[in-house]
Amino acid sequence: MEYSLVCHSLYAFWSSPVKKKLILLSIMFLIWVYMLYSCVGYCSTMPSLVVDSYRGKETGSAVGRRTESSRMELVSRLLAKPQPWEDIESDYDDSSIRTAASRDLLNNELDADRAEEWDEMRGEQQRALEPSAMSSFSNGSGSKKLPQAIIIGVKKGGTRALLEFLRVHPDIRAVGAEPHFFDRNYENGLEWYRELMPKTLEGQITMEKTPSYFVTREAPARISAMSRDTKLIVVVRDPVTRAISDYTQTLSKKPDIPSFESLTFKNRTTGLIDTSWSAIQIGIYAKHLDNWLQYFPMDQILFVSGERLISDPAGELGRVQDFLGLKRIITDKHFYFNQTKGFPCLKKAEGSSKPHCLGKTKGRTHPNIDPEVVQRLRDFYRPFNMKFYQMTGHNFGWD
Image (cartoon, rainbow, N blue to C red; front, side):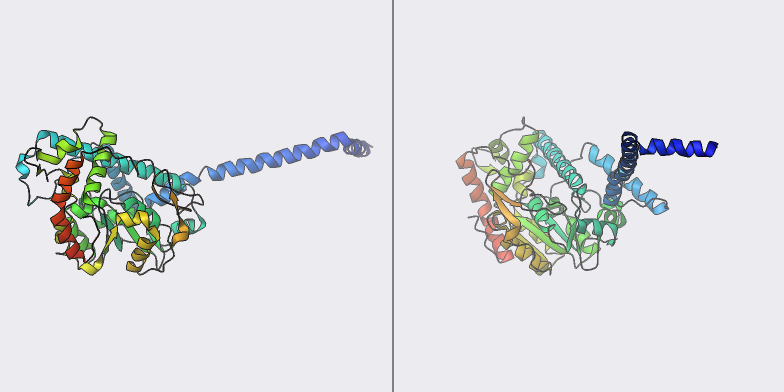
């Protein structure tokens, strides 16, 4: 009797249309809550997975602990106030006369460089959170290798643009932030350096870029010791325009620095150029190249025109792809010209389906410089440019 009453009650409850709808809605709500909970739980693990992949974390092993310790040391170095690096001794200037003001300026330049590197690193981390299918596949497999090709210079020549363009190629994998291994972090060892690199598959090339290598005296010997087969890429630009761009970067971070004119000359009356100022010294390309040729043959060094990288990016990228032994995949179809910034941008960047232009730190408006100062600098650089043209077998048309 009791059983039949229970069955009758259940039947009456289920036969009611309103109650039937309430039950179905409740079930659907519970399913939705469960799916939302599962999705949130999964997605919350993604950032740590991306960061761990980016950092090359190896948990649960002694090697992993040592690597993590090294990385923490690197972070502390980056956060710490940078120590001034020594300029290459100049054949054209007595470095002993460097003033306290110029030393302060060098620190300002280093602070500006470090701030810009952090801007680039933040951009890399932001893009790392939107991986493409190809980059996700590459991150999850393969192995870390020492770079087979390095963009070694020059500062404010267009190295960031070149690296961003090259990363579109499926056979190139590059670390985003500048490692500064061969100038600032060499004592950390090659294994530390390898851990900074992205994973690559068979047939892919590992790359990095640190523009200060080109003007670092020890860098050629150190890279040669790693591998004599390393391919080197140098992006060069009119040294006068490059020096003004260098100054503009520092000025954007330190508005109280002296004027470009006062820093350019030791003595404005005599017109003697101060080659101890790094903005001037970097542009003496022939002098720096001579140091590299002691360790690498010319056919292992490719010189990319910073001007042509703007006017004809596909053409310059074609030369780079040929130099690296890769199929010409990056072509005109990958670029569009941004009228506001005044240089080409990518229609689709590596790791993203969206158009990508370089950040706000690129393409700054240059301050107005006295035309007489510009002409004096052109006269100063002319013999060095001519020597550079002879060494490379290429006239870049700066004179």
